[in-house]
Length: 343
Length: 234
Image (cartoon, each protein chain N blue to C red):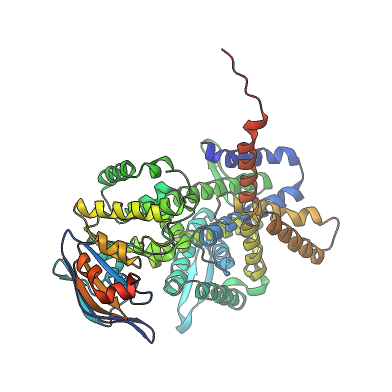
């Protein structure tokens, strides 16, 4: 229990956060989008932090999730090669969410299978290329994706409550809690995974690959499974994004968002459970805090500066740095604090 | 139990083993000694299936395991204790031991084996929740041995277990390896510390540039003038 105390404290703070923000739609909106990107950062951390494989195309899974979910709920009518026509009637967003998870999981499998026989730099290159190809498809397959005109009018998620029927989540507050619930589930799933036999295999490959192979770990299969779970999680985040913003265009595939996610993971502490969450909140909300005082271009400079400072002060990221401070204080504390003994 | 015939192995353009043949009898402690670069580690890596054989064969219990997948070799009962970085540094001692049983599907016997290993190495039991990277060199080697035993092997391949350890710890570690053999597990030991290995073993092979040049009982090799001059300092 003690191990999860910081996470539970953070969860409690996040549950109470809307009360503190009051009726500030601008801030609430910033927190929701930050939360969605943080889920994607958590999924990236599963690969980068726990298996050591860097996916520089992670935004592709996020974007595919967004498009699959949006198209499922909007419906489409396209003509494929050879005059074959595919018509799809709109389905509820919840099904879109499920299909987004499945489709991105399948993409993760494909990318993993293609690149994990060789790993390392090859995986980085395959993921970058994959993201670029997917972006070009989204941009140019106008009949399906509307290209740069964007997919608009995406329906929001709706909630079914016994006695109340279904209510669409049009306002910000319920969307905030939806993101929080999905984020918490993803966090719990990752926490469970990394402690399992599969998690030991992932971490073993990162810490000492030759030893991991000698104890019988199947590297390709382990890394591919990690990529599937990671991609599916990023796809879930993309689906949340599509149904919250209710408009998406090929800009969801921007490379800079992948960079932001990497900064969140590395700054927060890769290979830790809380790292991407803390990093996600800090680097997600930093632009909001800076917005009144400087233009976006200058914000990126501050971004870089903050990251450099973090890397200097806490080379392994914020969360491991703070954890170290806490243990140092704890181990030196008994010498100073007198212990009162009562009979 | 293990029979290697005319094994040829290499890395790229380099041929590390040039027709190596050796036999390990069941229940024995066999030492493979030789200089740096003679091909000792390559031999173990070839047995484990970590590198392919170019020609020749490796038989284990009469079955051909040449070019078999490392996982299948392990499942047949051959555990490899590689040299150098021996543990998963950021994992706890308990997790490192669990890694040794990665392929096993019999949880009750795994926990019994775990209890046995903690009994044999009380230091590991004390530090079971500590990260393996924070252990001393000797403790890490004991952990590596414990991990190898967790797969319930019938043959353990030890690669340079004395490397980088303090002399008094080396002695204790060799005693542990002898005890492992005496309890019925066959051992193939690769060592640069030729004298200690030859004293410890039942049978020994001397490897020079990819070929076995001498074989016999440990005491026979110690008495050999060539071995004395080249490996035991005169």
